[in-house]
Amino acid sequence: MAFVVAVAQRKGGAGKSTVAATLATALAAEGARVALLDTDPQKSLVRWYAERRAQGGGDGSGRAAHAPRPIAFDSPSGWRLGGALDRLRRGGGVDFVLLDTPPHDDTDARLAIRNADLVLVPLQPAPADLWATDATLALAAGERRPVRLVLNRVPATGKLAPQIVDEIARRRLPLLNEALGNRSAYPSAFAQGLGVVEAAPRSTAAEEARRLARAVAALREEG
Image (cartoon, rainbow, N blue to C red; front, top):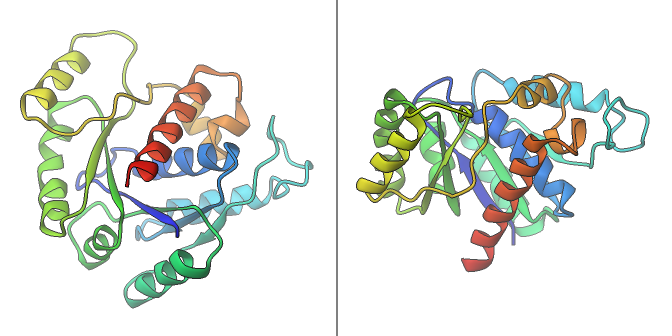
């Protein structure tokens, strides 16, 4: 049965769509069968997937360093979301379903979290992002869904990121050890409809993405 991961964060600009695409492509590169669902009204992943199709769909004709592996894609909303997830869980032939959710507490975000096996909350290492997680954590707690925080766009230097990590630890919030750095490789790959493991497979960003994918896969095995 598919393992459903809702990428959720109340605050806009936290990088949900990029994290969802990065994780989906990294899992696929590890050999997993992956579906990616865009439930965010901004539809960033709809555009990303259109660019991805232009890469050749894994037939080797695209511009990626590694040809894209197939990823199932849909953009359901409202009442369609439950049906789409049910089909993928029970008969979709996939191992993971990644959900990009709206950046606010509306019906679609609640439905996505309610149907998730894991709620992955990306946040930049900044106080505003950490404060904004409270609403998402409360929503996940209300639906009794397990949560993991993941730091995104972490700068290579500076004191703020360690301070945020310390505050997360003080609050005993579940933070993944694996983080994504503030690297141009991520938006560059996203603009091409790719993940960093495809656009720049030997980069530091790609290794970060692989570590995150393996951490999420390990959580599936634990469940």
